[in-house]
Amino acid sequence: MAGGRLTHREKAVAFRRATPAVADTLAVLGTQVFLDTYAPDGVRPTVAREVLATFSPEACAAWVADPRSAVEVAELDGHVVGFAHLVLGAGHALAPPGEPAELLRLYVQKPFAGRGIGTSLLRHAERAAAEAGAAVLWLTAWVHNAPALAFYVARGYADCGATPYRFEDEVHENRVVARRLPPHNAGSPGPTEAPP
Image (cartoon, rainbow, N blue to C red; front, top):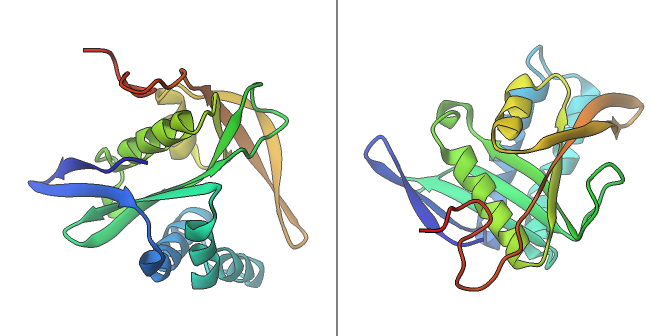
């Protein structure tokens, strides 16, 4: 994923590839956004265990080190305010045919939502997927996360159907959403940019 800048209240939001040094930051930010989204009524033991397993510093360091992954962070004034986690080659039976990539997570802290940071992270992920040869970018979103589902639909993603999200003995409905990516050619616009 290429770096870039976005203005946010007269301060520039910088985008860069994550390094192992930000694993702790990814763990904390991921935990915060997960709990804000999936535990608005409080934290029960199953959710606590899911968060601790998914967002441990060791797990986040493994994402950054995995050659099949690309993790892009958004920083504002030296603070990480969001990240996108792309997994190359990961497919799903409900996604359209073609070389796949999964957007495993796109997380932006609540105070920064609706300000273009999530869209910029998504575009970085699309570009990175296309550059790696993916033809389809897909993800899952919780069926009750209406803002996320609307976000992706507004950016050209189609709902491909229901899929279960399981942890321990709980099953939650997610929606698979996907978008075809135009082929990437060196020197041409990225997958979501119009030619000049």
